[in-house]
Length: 116
Image 1: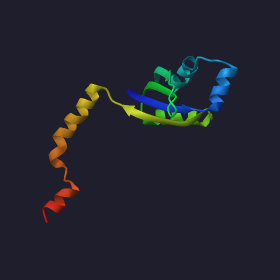
Image 2: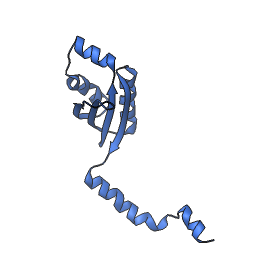
Image 3: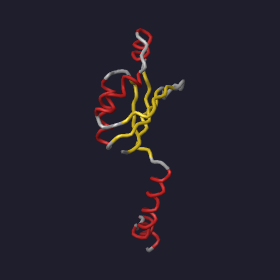
Image 4: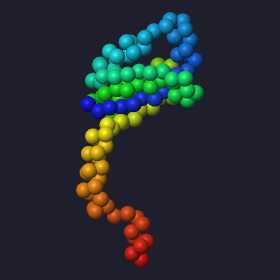
């Protein structure tokens, strides 16, 4: 499972729905995330003008997370919704270890200018 961060901006329709019928959205969304092979780790709401909702999930792959966010976007409750693959410190170390072993194989465009 991979970690993902989902950032969204809820809209007035979301607010109107919550005022009309307050809900614990984490309880409601958890089974949906699980149906696509994921796990909802945390869901937070912010008082920020551009980002009002944050979710931390584990997902099996990018396709599943893209499907989740596509369905959520289609609900019409968000003006903006984006997802990002997140890496913990061990994963990031492994990424840079691989990069370190392959660095000598890369030829930059700048090197062609230097050789003229």
